[in-house]
Image 1 (tube, rainbow, N blue to C red):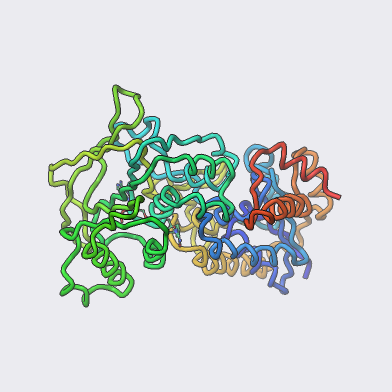
Image 2 (cartoon, protein in one colour; image 1 turned 180 degrees about the horizontal axis):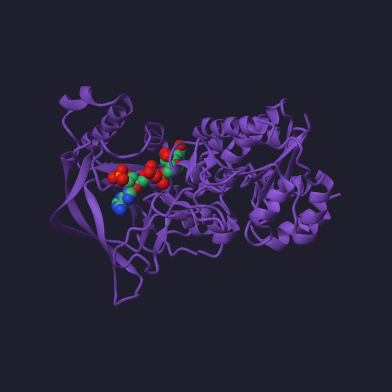
Length: 452
Ligand code: NAP
């Protein structure tokens, strides 16, 4: 059987897991070209995972092993819809897999959401992780209190990053521009607001537990918001552990000797982000106080009691979930922000597939993408094995590279990324950091061109 060629658009975890399983295939054999609009691969592992979580980031070692396998190529600085079209890819590949993740935020839809100082966590996370699109964010951390909206792991990541000391950050791959801003920050209290209760919060226990290990940080929880221990036995294990932690913090009370506070406020929905006039910077958040009601499906739903509470602050971070962005000429479901599919096969299309957050929505941890990608690859390989493409002729791999080089003068291949990677790691060695990220596009291209 001839070697089939698959293009994967997006180089984050789901793209790499799809590439790994495709390269495992021997019948038919498959080669993979992976595209990214950035010069650098790894998606959210590079630009999303919090820099103080190097163990999670170390999953990139698996992606390096996949990238080193015969039949794999990487092409950075290739933007679908700008540099190449879907039809052009379908002319050159037997199948195309979209692995572009969820690149924007879910909106709150409340007044004041776009004031200066009200930031989407997607942007803030990209900024401290050195994503070139957000390097210019320049958040104002001169206020003493920040409010984070949302009760998931991203909310926790951004709250923690705001409260880590300079020493905690210096050994990480946090972008240098962000380390400087964090080091000068006046933020001493972050209030994390969940619209439902501690039982319904989406935090994972490991991420909550590590708050106890942060120097100078105390966790503040109102005992009145924590359910009675008698109900713990009815809770699923993970939820029970979370509630036990919140109860421990509530009972201990804040440690006033610690100068940084992370406070959790439950049953609070933002109703307005406050500031002077229509577009003055953030001065606070008006919160609606909720009670919980069980809906027909047994889900606890927040219901506005009509009572209000105002929290003064200089910064609001909205961390209420990510959202997918439509790709040009690719079906898209506006409601869910995903590409409609059945087992990874895009509805109404042939030879087009989807994996990861743009397939199932922005949920799950990195490892969730392995199973997700395997499902899609199974469908894709079954389609190839049906023999439908056996007689199709596609351009040889070298011709595709030549075509791409003409289209994208700043094309970055695997060696180019290797040069960037080696430079970043070497730059981190003296400071004991995993790497010092290069953010600027022209510096990245200098490194690519200078490679020996
Ligand atoms: P998430 O887990 O879905 O949490 C979103 C939070 O926003 C929920 O608490 C949700 O509350 C709340 N929310 C949604 N709409 C809201 C609104 N209009 N007003 C107020 N609150 C609202 O999403 P995420 O934190 O963005 O994380 C995405 C995925 O990445 C998750 O699976 C997460 O576990 C994973 N992740 C993992 C790690 C890690 O393992 N260290 C780190 C970061 C992210 P409701 O529950 O009431 O809807």
